[in-house]
Amino acid sequence: MKYNRIGLFGGSFNPPHLGHLIMAEEFVNRFSIDKLFFIPVGIPPHKNVELAPKEDRFKMTVLATADNEKFFVSDYEIKKEEPSYTYITVLEFKNRFYNSEIFLLLGYDSLLEIKTWKNYNLIFENAKLCAFAREGFDIRGFDKEILRKILIIDDIKINISSSMIRERIKKGLPYRYFLHPRVYDYIVAKGFYR
Image (cartoon, rainbow, N blue to C red; front, side):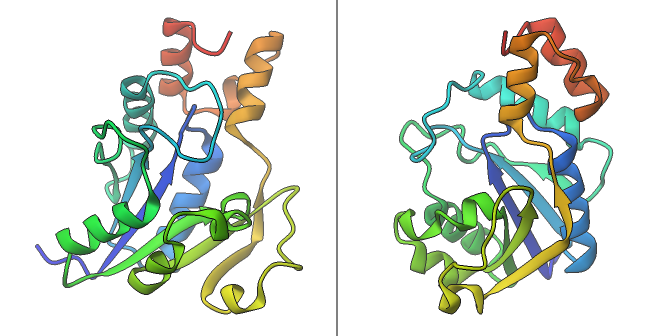
């Protein structure tokens, strides 16, 4: 089957939360994405965060996305033994879906760091980028040349983050309604983030 528009949504998904799902659904609907791949990172090159085991982050992402027929979870990055670089992942999916347009979804937090990413110019050459507004991140002073190349979704701001959820769990604060119920149950069963 031919897919015209393939979306990629990489992240640590530590844990995947409702903000990720809202961003993904809005992205799919606005840009007529045929298939959106959530791609949990194996070894992140930029984030120095204690991660739940990659197999568990993959499983939680599968649990979170199972209700949407356009959402898929790729194990491409978690199978790798070396750090995951976005440009390599983009090139891999461009090769797999060579007749399709590749779109990359990221939040403002990632956009503000993109110039530090390895070979970031190859990402722009091989994918259309879409940046989603995140509460607390301002792109007004960001590189204007890069901003001209990016599709922006700024009429919805997500105020949920994985780090906020992990912090709430550590402090014993309620966090259930930031997560898909299956992900919440999985975290409770595994005892993650305490």
